[in-house]
Image (cartoon, rainbow, N blue to C red; front, side, top):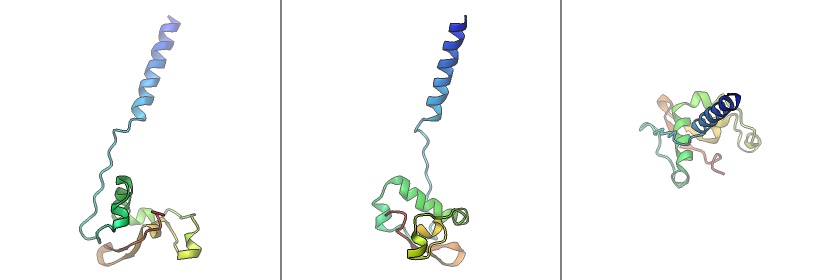
Amino acid sequence: MKKILSLLFLITAIGLLLAACSSSKEINVTLDKKHLPLPDYVLNSSDLIQETYAMVSNYPEVVAGVPCYCGCYAQDGHESNLDCYIDSFGEDKAVTGWDSMSIS
């Protein structure tokens, strides 16, 4: 009986682990039309990078709270991860300039 319960527990644990590791989760973040279109260096990158740029443009206040440790502060004056994606904003927080730091 103990072997059956142990085997059942093991099968359940493996099933849960496989379900959690599933790659079927699709992220689909689109760029708002108010922003400058994504540059070629982003469009020629993976879908994940394109979605990340779009996500950063949609939630700049969140990304601005994430410090950047890549050393770009001394070189480019970046203060957060936001600066590694977006160079400038216009009215209504519309992206008017993109930064390529996060591609390099």
